[in-house]
Length: 113
Length: 114
Image (cartoon, rainbow over all chains, first blue to last red; front, side):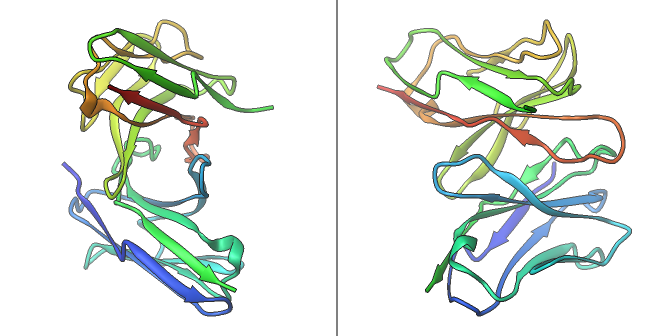
Protein backbone atom coordinates (compact mmCIF):
# COMPACT_ATOMS: atom_id res chain seq x y z
CA UNK A 1 0.00 0.00 0.00
CA UNK A 2 0.86 3.67 -0.03
CA UNK A 3 3.34 5.10 2.46
CA UNK A 4 3.67 8.86 3.01
CA UNK A 5 6.54 10.34 4.97
CA UNK A 6 6.51 13.94 6.13
CA UNK A 7 9.37 16.18 7.34
CA UNK A 8 10.08 17.95 9.56
CA UNK A 9 7.88 16.86 12.45
CA UNK A 10 8.24 20.29 14.06
CA UNK A 11 9.14 23.61 12.49
CA UNK A 12 9.63 26.94 14.22
CA UNK A 13 9.90 30.15 12.19
CA UNK A 14 9.86 33.86 12.86
CA UNK A 15 6.82 35.81 11.76
CA UNK A 16 7.31 36.96 8.18
CA UNK A 17 9.67 34.15 7.26
CA UNK A 18 8.82 31.32 4.89
CA UNK A 19 8.06 27.74 5.92
CA UNK A 20 8.50 24.61 3.82
CA UNK A 21 7.14 21.16 4.64
CA UNK A 22 8.12 18.16 2.53
CA UNK A 23 6.44 14.83 1.85
CA UNK A 24 7.45 11.75 -0.07
CA UNK A 25 5.15 8.96 -1.22
CA UNK A 26 5.76 5.42 -2.37
CA UNK A 27 2.94 4.53 -4.78
CA UNK A 28 3.63 5.85 -8.26
CA UNK A 29 -0.09 5.47 -9.05
CA UNK A 30 -1.01 8.23 -6.57
CA UNK A 31 -2.49 11.17 -8.41
CA UNK A 32 -4.02 13.51 -5.82
CA UNK A 33 -2.12 15.29 -3.05
CA UNK A 34 -4.01 17.44 -0.52
CA UNK A 35 -2.73 19.39 2.46
CA UNK A 36 -4.79 19.71 5.61
CA UNK A 37 -4.34 22.20 8.45
CA UNK A 38 -5.38 21.30 11.99
CA UNK A 39 -5.47 24.06 14.57
CA UNK A 40 -5.22 23.12 18.22
CA UNK A 41 -8.33 21.24 19.33
CA UNK A 42 -9.98 21.57 15.92
CA UNK A 43 -10.72 19.28 13.01
CA UNK A 44 -8.43 19.01 9.95
CA UNK A 45 -9.40 21.29 7.10
CA UNK A 46 -8.26 21.28 3.49
CA UNK A 47 -6.07 24.25 2.61
CA UNK A 48 -4.74 23.35 -0.82
CA UNK A 49 -4.46 20.35 -3.11
CA UNK A 50 -2.75 19.39 -6.33
CA UNK A 51 -3.32 16.74 -8.94
CA UNK A 52 -0.65 14.78 -10.75
CA UNK A 53 -1.05 16.62 -14.04
CA UNK A 54 0.04 19.89 -12.42
CA UNK A 55 3.51 20.78 -11.12
CA UNK A 56 2.65 23.76 -8.95
CA UNK A 57 -0.40 25.47 -7.50
CA UNK A 58 -0.67 28.72 -5.58
CA UNK A 59 -3.33 30.26 -3.38
CA UNK A 60 -2.28 33.61 -1.92
CA UNK A 61 0.54 32.86 0.57
CA UNK A 62 0.34 29.11 0.14
CA UNK A 63 1.82 27.04 -2.68
CA UNK A 64 2.28 23.36 -3.32
CA UNK A 65 4.82 21.80 -5.69
CA UNK A 66 4.82 18.26 -7.01
CA UNK A 67 7.67 16.23 -8.49
CA UNK A 68 6.16 13.00 -9.77
CA UNK A 69 9.47 11.60 -10.94
CA UNK A 70 10.98 11.90 -7.49
CA UNK A 71 7.65 11.15 -5.78
CA UNK A 72 7.71 14.11 -3.50
CA UNK A 73 5.59 17.20 -2.92
CA UNK A 74 6.02 20.24 -0.73
CA UNK A 75 3.97 22.94 0.97
CA UNK A 76 5.34 26.47 0.94
CA UNK A 77 3.96 29.20 3.18
CA UNK A 78 5.33 32.70 2.62
CA UNK A 79 5.13 35.71 4.95
CA UNK A 80 4.09 33.49 7.84
CA UNK A 81 1.73 34.87 10.47
CA UNK A 82 0.98 33.67 14.02
CA UNK A 83 -2.37 32.30 12.83
CA UNK A 84 -0.47 29.91 10.55
CA UNK A 85 0.61 28.05 13.70
CA UNK A 86 -0.99 24.60 13.48
CA UNK A 87 -0.31 21.00 12.55
CA UNK A 88 -0.13 20.40 8.82
CA UNK A 89 -0.77 17.02 7.21
CA UNK A 90 0.07 15.97 3.69
CA UNK A 91 -1.76 13.07 2.06
CA UNK A 92 -1.75 11.05 -1.13
CA UNK A 93 -4.48 9.21 -2.99
CA UNK A 94 -4.62 7.05 -6.08
CA UNK A 95 -8.37 6.89 -6.57
CA UNK A 96 -10.05 9.23 -9.03
CA UNK A 97 -12.18 11.01 -6.44
CA UNK A 98 -9.38 11.55 -3.92
CA UNK A 99 -11.10 9.58 -1.21
CA UNK A 100 -8.61 6.87 -0.27
CA UNK A 101 -6.17 9.13 1.52
CA UNK A 102 -2.93 8.03 3.18
CA UNK A 103 -1.67 10.76 5.51
CA UNK A 104 1.81 11.76 6.55
CA UNK A 105 2.71 11.98 10.23
CA UNK A 106 2.12 15.73 10.47
CA UNK A 107 4.27 18.84 11.01
CA UNK A 108 3.74 21.15 13.93
CA UNK A 109 4.44 24.66 12.68
CA UNK A 110 5.07 27.39 15.24
CA UNK A 111 5.26 30.99 14.07
CA UNK A 112 6.87 33.27 16.63
CA UNK A 113 5.65 36.87 16.69
CA UNK B 1 -25.27 24.37 7.49
CA UNK B 2 -23.25 21.62 5.81
CA UNK B 3 -21.54 19.59 8.48
CA UNK B 4 -20.32 16.30 9.87
CA UNK B 5 -21.30 15.59 13.46
CA UNK B 6 -19.93 13.04 15.89
CA UNK B 7 -21.14 11.90 19.29
CA UNK B 8 -19.96 11.72 21.93
CA UNK B 9 -17.13 14.25 21.80
CA UNK B 10 -15.41 12.78 24.85
CA UNK B 11 -15.70 9.29 26.29
CA UNK B 12 -13.93 7.50 29.10
CA UNK B 13 -14.69 3.81 29.36
CA UNK B 14 -13.30 0.58 30.72
CA UNK B 15 -11.73 -2.35 28.91
CA UNK B 16 -14.27 -4.67 27.35
CA UNK B 17 -17.34 -2.44 27.54
CA UNK B 18 -18.90 -2.15 24.09
CA UNK B 19 -19.32 1.34 22.73
CA UNK B 20 -20.53 3.12 19.62
CA UNK B 21 -19.42 6.46 18.25
CA UNK B 22 -21.96 7.97 15.90
CA UNK B 23 -21.21 9.98 12.77
CA UNK B 24 -23.71 11.81 10.62
CA UNK B 25 -23.39 14.09 7.59
CA UNK B 26 -26.01 16.27 5.91
CA UNK B 27 -24.25 16.80 2.57
CA UNK B 28 -25.56 13.69 0.82
CA UNK B 29 -22.00 12.42 0.47
CA UNK B 30 -21.47 8.90 -0.78
CA UNK B 31 -18.08 8.40 0.83
CA UNK B 32 -17.55 8.23 4.58
CA UNK B 33 -14.51 7.21 6.56
CA UNK B 34 -13.17 6.79 10.08
CA UNK B 35 -9.64 7.79 11.13
CA UNK B 36 -7.75 7.62 14.34
CA UNK B 37 -5.15 10.25 15.19
CA UNK B 38 -2.19 9.42 17.39
CA UNK B 39 0.85 11.64 18.05
CA UNK B 40 3.50 11.29 15.35
CA UNK B 41 1.40 8.85 13.32
CA UNK B 42 -0.87 11.28 11.57
CA UNK B 43 -4.35 10.15 10.61
CA UNK B 44 -4.76 6.45 9.96
CA UNK B 45 -7.81 5.10 8.23
CA UNK B 46 -9.84 2.51 10.12
CA UNK B 47 -12.76 1.77 7.79
CA UNK B 48 -14.42 3.47 4.87
CA UNK B 49 -17.67 3.24 2.95
CA UNK B 50 -18.32 4.12 -0.68
CA UNK B 51 -22.08 4.01 -0.29
CA UNK B 52 -24.95 2.38 1.62
CA UNK B 53 -24.17 -1.23 2.54
CA UNK B 54 -20.66 -0.94 1.07
CA UNK B 55 -17.83 -0.89 3.61
CA UNK B 56 -14.18 -1.88 3.54
CA UNK B 57 -11.16 -2.03 5.78
CA UNK B 58 -8.62 0.73 5.96
CA UNK B 59 -5.10 0.49 7.33
CA UNK B 60 -5.93 -0.24 11.00
CA UNK B 61 -9.31 -2.08 11.18
CA UNK B 62 -8.52 -4.55 13.98
CA UNK B 63 -10.87 -4.17 16.94
CA UNK B 64 -13.40 -2.02 15.09
CA UNK B 65 -16.64 -2.55 13.21
CA UNK B 66 -18.76 -0.21 11.11
CA UNK B 67 -22.11 -0.24 9.37
CA UNK B 68 -23.69 1.90 6.66
CA UNK B 69 -27.42 1.29 6.67
CA UNK B 70 -28.29 4.86 5.73
CA UNK B 71 -26.40 7.27 3.53
CA UNK B 72 -26.03 9.94 6.20
CA UNK B 73 -24.84 7.73 9.11
CA UNK B 74 -21.66 5.75 9.63
CA UNK B 75 -21.26 4.55 13.23
CA UNK B 76 -17.99 3.15 14.59
CA UNK B 77 -18.37 0.21 16.95
CA UNK B 78 -15.80 -1.06 19.43
CA UNK B 79 -17.09 -4.44 20.58
CA UNK B 80 -14.47 -4.94 23.29
CA UNK B 81 -12.36 -1.79 23.71
CA UNK B 82 -8.77 -2.09 24.88
CA UNK B 83 -6.35 0.57 26.17
CA UNK B 84 -4.48 0.65 22.82
CA UNK B 85 -7.65 2.07 21.28
CA UNK B 86 -7.28 5.21 23.36
CA UNK B 87 -7.08 7.85 20.66
CA UNK B 88 -8.69 10.80 18.93
CA UNK B 89 -11.19 9.62 16.33
CA UNK B 90 -12.39 11.56 13.31
CA UNK B 91 -15.20 10.78 10.93
CA UNK B 92 -15.02 12.31 7.45
CA UNK B 93 -17.20 12.42 4.37
CA UNK B 94 -16.76 13.46 0.76
CA UNK B 95 -18.53 13.36 -2.54
CA UNK B 96 -17.67 10.81 -5.21
CA UNK B 97 -18.76 13.23 -7.91
CA UNK B 98 -16.00 14.92 -9.85
CA UNK B 99 -14.61 18.27 -8.85
CA UNK B 100 -14.92 18.51 -5.06
CA UNK B 101 -12.24 16.29 -3.60
CA UNK B 102 -12.30 17.71 -0.11
CA UNK B 103 -12.91 15.41 2.83
CA UNK B 104 -15.02 17.13 5.47
CA UNK B 105 -14.10 16.11 8.98
CA UNK B 106 -16.25 15.89 12.06
CA UNK B 107 -15.18 17.60 15.31
CA UNK B 108 -13.50 14.49 16.70
CA UNK B 109 -14.15 12.09 19.57
CA UNK B 110 -11.52 11.71 22.24
CA UNK B 111 -11.73 8.18 23.62
CA UNK B 112 -9.92 6.94 26.71
CA UNK B 113 -10.02 3.23 27.56
CA UNK B 114 -8.78 2.33 31.04
